[in-house]
Amino acid sequence: MITLPLEKMATRVAGSLCVATGLGEEMIVSSMKKYEDRAVELALNPVKLQALTNKLKEVRMTCPLFDTARWVRNLERAYYKMWNLYCSSRHPEPFKVVEDDNESPFDR
Image 1 (spheres, rainbow, N blue to C red):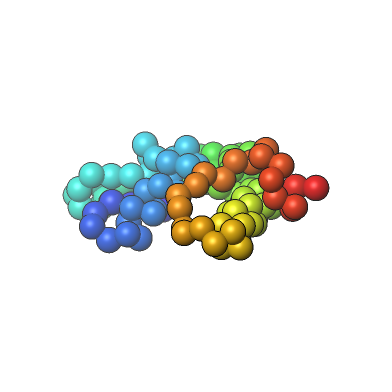
Image 2 (tube, rainbow, N blue to C red; image 1 turned 30 degrees about the vertical axis):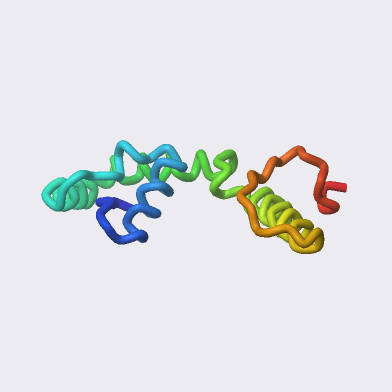
């Protein structure tokens, strides 16, 4: 997807997705003119469009963005940390999810 990050959250999310897949330079533009130019360029150049598609397909198996099982494990870790805070009568507080903390029962 070609994206022009503006004020709307969806446009910024689209930019983040492009960066996460390694396609940021090719797909993030800085003006409406560049957006239109890139869309026309890709529409008229199927070889370039296919190269971008192939690049995305290549990273799909290694990019953390597409690792759903990892994402779920980390979400479960976050829920577990929040639950422990609640059960210990502590106020909500910021924390980081660490993948190898072995604190979550989901890691066992």
